[in-house]
Each structure stands twice: as C-alpha cells, then as structure tokens.
Length: 135
Image 1 (tube, rainbow, N blue to C red):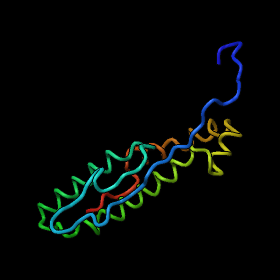
Image 2 (image 1 turned 90 degrees about the vertical axis):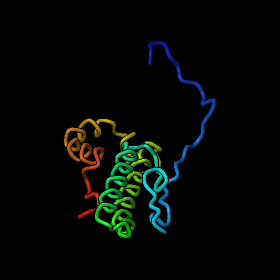
Image 3 (image 1 turned 135 degrees about the horizontal axis):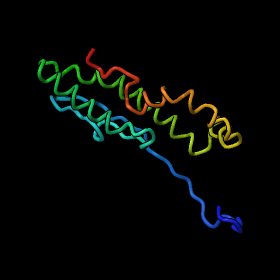
Image 4 (image 1 turned 135 degrees about the vertical axis):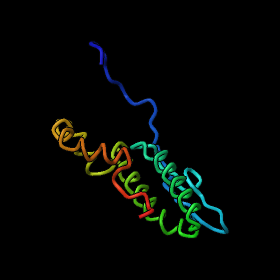
C-alpha cells in the first residue's frame, strides 16, 4: 500500500462459489461428452483445458480402436480425481479451510514451502499427476 494509505470499514463484501460437477453419464447411445460438457469446475490450477484435451484424445483413440463403449469407465475415474482435487484447492483462497487460515496467519510458511512444493505443483498444474485413461 502507498505511504499514508489507511484502511476503513468494508464497503461491500460477498462470497463466491463454484460448481464442481460431472455429467452423468459421460457416454450413452454412441454420444460422448467431453470438456466443459462433461465436467465443470473452478479455473484454479488451470486444469480444465488440459482435461478436455485429454477427453478428446481418449475419445479419438477409442473410436480408432472401436472401443467407444469403454469411454465412461476409462474417463470417469480420471475426471472425478481431477475435479475433486480442484474443488479442494479452490477452497484455499476462499479462506475457509485450516490450510487457508494457516497460510494467512503465517505467510512466511508459503515462502518456506514454495521451493519444496514446486515440482509437485508443476506436475499437478500440467496435468501430469495421473494417467489419461487408456492404459
């Protein structure tokens, strides 16, 4: 804050929220849902686009192998895992979790942890923390 800045009362406050949802089913009658049509979640961690690209890749591979009926069983566990992780991570900036409260009370902890967590965070953000579902 610039020198001389003072803090007064809060003029406006609101809560934000995100829907974290997965379509049921992902596959029916030779129709597959992928990307935003299949799953919606917060943008925290920038996982949505990569997950949608994975959906399309798996869809194309299954069509080529005449295995489209396997789409649901292959993608649902992957999508559920990613959406669950994104939902948990989204709660940190909202400040309602114990982790969020800890970070706000001890910001030095973030500076100390950042170098140690860098590899894991990079792996997670890039979507390299799971198999895509064709194995």
